[in-house]
View 1 (cartoon, rainbow, N blue to C red):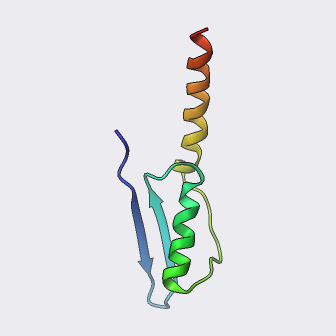
View 2: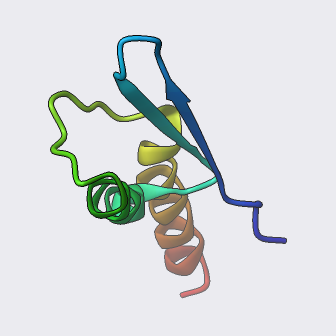
Length: 71
């Protein structure tokens, strides 16, 4: 089952916008940054990765190991 994608956006009283993706693994989250920049006519000042970013690498490693076991 695929996880539901969520985008949490917060706008502070000073106009600062922060956003975090949930349920987006790997570098696909970067696509959402570009969409937000376009929608808000803004530029990213700071960004970081959540635990979801590295989930793809761990999952791919596990799939590779399972594939090797089949031989």
